[in-house]
Image (cartoon, rainbow, N blue to C red; front, side, top):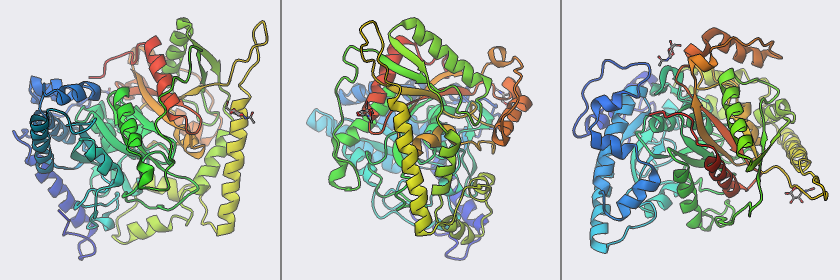
Length: 564
Ligand SMILES: *[C@@H]1O[C@H](CO)[C@@H](O)[C@H](O)[C@H]1NC(C)=O
Ligand SMILES: *[C@@H]1O[C@H](CO)[C@@H](O)[C@H](O)[C@H]1NC(C)=O
């Protein structure tokens, strides 16, 4: 239903926000059976599920996509039961983390009933995602529903049709049941807006769920979803996946359908966003991407690349070669991140089946300068117009990325060409650096091939404290290069293991800001936060990156801890 309380119809931004929250609360209250008022929310909210949900609901919502797909297709479990369970856990996730913009109980239950009947009538599933619940970041348009992209003034805009990605997933059998929060402007690595406030991390409410797909991140971390849709132009799928201990993939741009989303900077071609999955399993991510590509999205969206899913074995008996980026040379990661990297590297080396080498960061400071000068090419004009239209104040991280960004430029066409040439030169240089990793070694001088994937931190800390996620470099680096990047959970912050004082003299202002946070809060302040890492491949090697993680997961039991 379209919002009627809007700034266009004369309401203040506070009234619009209050009305959107009222609408959200009404959709939560419509969940059957209803959840009680929750007043005793602990900092780590995960135990709430066991307290308020049934054993069956817990079992269903903690199942992986690959298991649900089988049970739903053979009728062992009905789509209706699955959706009811996820609706209840999503409602609880809202109470725990503030991650929902609206639940869609009526639509979802109607759809589930249709799918259950379809299976009974046809004795086969409707498609590869028959009955799978998928949660969706708000700015992905859903027919007939509001579409605000985090701006108060945009409330009242209604999507005329489902986004292209939703159309394909729908045909494959998906059930959309939850829409999730995003930050003002979509350009934060956290999730904070004037419409809904702050989305917090389910493992510690003093920490951020990440962003901009932070509603997705918190919902998946809480297990109110097993598969969700995020978007990423600087880390927006990967930071929330990492902060909440789930898998997430930013594919190379131009592979998955982007049509029908709302955002500023649409039409920009020099830095292109990507849509992708967050999931509690790697197989969930893979099934999502493969299903979309198998449906040839390029036939409807000509800006996409007409590459079928590559199902070949990229290694064919040879060893996977991983290069480790310990530190990007700009902002040093906090000790827990380095510990997780060390442990993965040690285990890989011990396995003997994976080659591990070092990756020297190549001018990641310059990379940030370039990408930061290519966001907001109109000098932030579109964002300014969108916020001015409602007089909503700027959230701290909107201010950080637009106003406190020394590299931002109000471009002329000529200056944009110059910046884009600089981007291309950097891409070529990085490619050359990657090629130089090819070695000709061994007794007979045999060729060893280049590095396959880079193993990198996802950010300079585990889930940051609210309003402190300021360094994007560990994720935006791969947007600038347009490399596919896959997040996987490894460990969590542990006071015993991470508590030791480390002496370090920061090398620049950004580094100092990040290190001071560690000095101030220490392991206790980040306690229980998931620690995740990132695999990065070369452009269009999405399938290879996934296979690389499959190989590593065979060698090393990941994650090292259970989160739930
Ligand atoms: C760089 O490496 C790629 C992938 O191995 C290869 O296809 C390409 O020919 C190499 N380019 C140069 C200039 O060496
Ligand atoms: C969460 O953060 C607070 C504040 O830094 C800290 O005291 C607490 O130990 C952390 N973890 C949990 C589970 O409470």
